[in-house]
Amino acid sequence: MLRRTTLAAVAATIALSAAACGSATETPAAAPQTTAQAAATPAAKAAAKISANTATEDQITAALRGAGVANPGHWAEEVMEYRPYDSTDTNMDRLRQKLAKYNPGADTMSKILSVLQP
Image 1 (tube, rainbow, N blue to C red):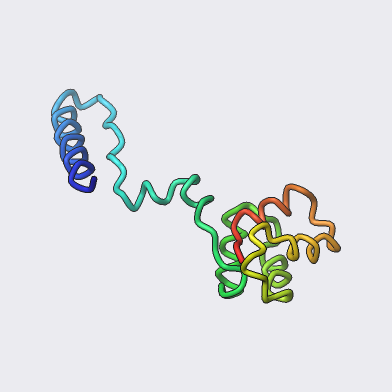
Image 2 (cartoon, rainbow, N blue to C red):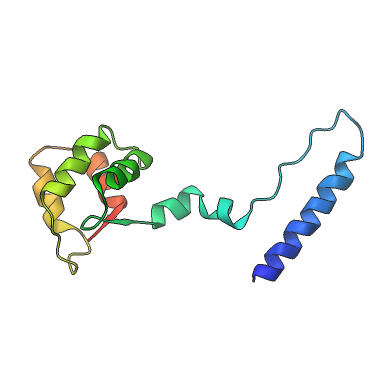
């Protein structure tokens, strides 16, 4: 798979180089994404969850900020306050219950839970 990706990247680079040799007024095409860049797509970020039990407050804050949660530092503190979370509680029901008392709203709750796992 890696070899096929590398070959595709080389072919795209050659094609871009050939296109760049044309008119000076042409707009160059975007460079192909590397594997690391592809992994950083929004879908990949959404799939990557951090542990509510072991992540640092800074890591939780960064994950919440990346998910678009308003006031991520406050919510990270709340997540840390109610540790530990049962590893079998994959829906994070206990965290939902604890955060509900702050009335975060459905969108905020969804964003918080989208980046956390027990």
